[in-house]
Every structure is written in structure tokens, then in C-alpha cells.
Length: 85
Image (cartoon, rainbow, N blue to C red; front, side, top):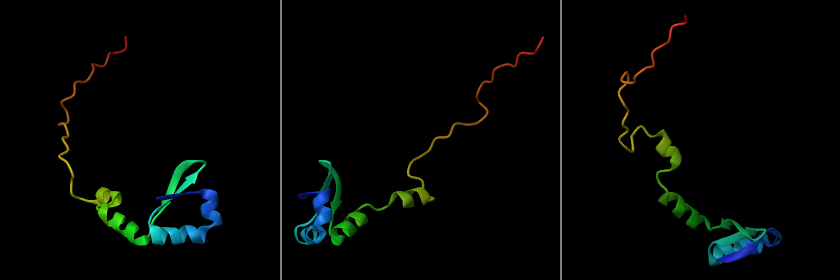
């Protein structure tokens, strides 16, 4: 994977995009740290399909993923209330 400083990726975007389409994913760095990756759309779609179900789908699902144990109510001991003298 080729690495591009953000300044080069911006200044030479057409070349950056062409490299992505012909060579595969291209890494972008910002101040020397990895910041982003440009990937071809077919790779992106493959990654999206592999990530099923999405977090949104899991959160909206009415099917439970684990057995949630909820303790019975009313078994807790309460402190006695001290009367004012």
C-alpha cells in the first residue's frame, strides 16, 4: 500500500485516485500519522457486506443477542427510617 502525505494527496488528487483504482488502497498520512485510506469502490462494498449486520441493525433488532438476567424486584432490604425525636 502506497502512503501519501495529505498535502501530496490534495495537490495530486487525480494521480492519487488513479493509483487507488489501479494499485489498490492508498494510505493518507497527516503529520506523519496514518489518517485515512482511499479504497476502490468494489473493495468498499465488499467490506460493507462483510460487516453485516451493522451496529444500527443490531440496535434496532427485536431479537436478543444474549440472555439478559434481570433480578426479581422487591427482594432488596431497605434501611429503617429513623423517626425524628
